[in-house]
Image (cartoon, helix red, strand yellow):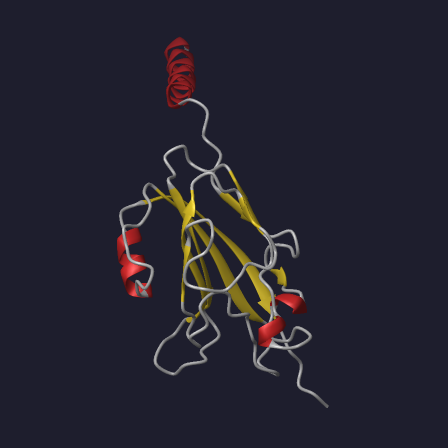
Length: 193
C-alpha cells in the first residue's frame, strides 16, 4: 500500500515539475473585427451589397493582439472557400496585404486601394483584379457563405517587388510564419421576390 501511495505521489510531483519547467504559456496571436462577431454575419457596408455597390464598400477595421516578439511584419488574407466565382479554383481570393510593419496592431476601417500604401505595405490583386479590398459577394439564394480573414505574423519583411504575384508572396511567407489567427464572417443574400 505504501509503495502505491509513493508511486502516486511521485507521478503527481513529476507532472507538476514538468509543467513548471515549461513555464507560463505565451498568449497566441489573436485577430478581431469589432464590426461583427467571429463567425457572425458581415455587415453590408463591408460587402458588395453596400449602398453604391463594390466601389462604395469599405474594409472593416481589423485589430490584433499578442503579436510574437519575433514578428517583423504582418500579412492579411481574405478568402472565400465556398465562394467559387471562378471555375478554375476552389477558393475565391478577395484581399491580400503584406509587409504591414511590425509595430502595427490594427488597420482602420476603410483602407485605401492601390499596390503600395503609405505605411510601406503592399496589396495583391483580387480574383477580379481589384488592387486592395474586394468585398465579399455571396450569390443570392446560395445560403450562408463563409469568409476567412487570416492574419499572419512573419519573422521578416518579404523581399519582393510591389508587383509580386500571390503565389510569390505565399511562397516567400513559407517558413517565416511565427503566428497566425483566423476570424470568420458569413454573408447570405436571400433571393429577391
